[in-house]
Length: 158
Image (cartoon, rainbow, N blue to C red; front, top):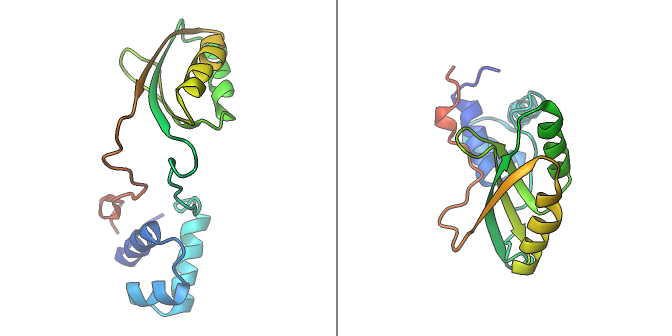
C-alpha cells in the first residue's frame, strides 16, 4: 500500500491516541470526517493497522518482574524449532519472542509477578522444552523507554 503524507499523519495520531474520534482525527490531519474514516478503514484492511489496545502499567497489574531471556537450542531441526515456538505461543508471560542471529537462537521478553514465578517459568516451562540447551535470564531493573509508536516518517514514501 502506498502511503501519502495524510496517511502517515493519520498513523502518527492514531498510534499516540487510538481512542480519538474520527471527527477529531479528521480535524488534526486536515480532512473531513468521511474521507478520514475511509482512509482509516483502508489502513486497517491493508493490515498496516493491526489493532488497538490499552497500554497497562505492569506494576499496577501485579506483574512487577520483567526479564529478557535468551534461549539456545541444541540443534536447528524443523521439529525442535517448531516445537519450541508452539510451546511459547500460548504462554501469557511471554510478551514477545524473537528469533535471533548470533550465539542465541531466541530472545524473549517475559513478565511475571515475582522471582518465584520467573523461576517456575524457567525451570518448569523453558528447561523442559525438548531441544533447549541453554537459558540465560537478565532481570529488567528499570524501563527507560517503552513505546509502541513506529516512526511514520520512515514509512514508505508516496
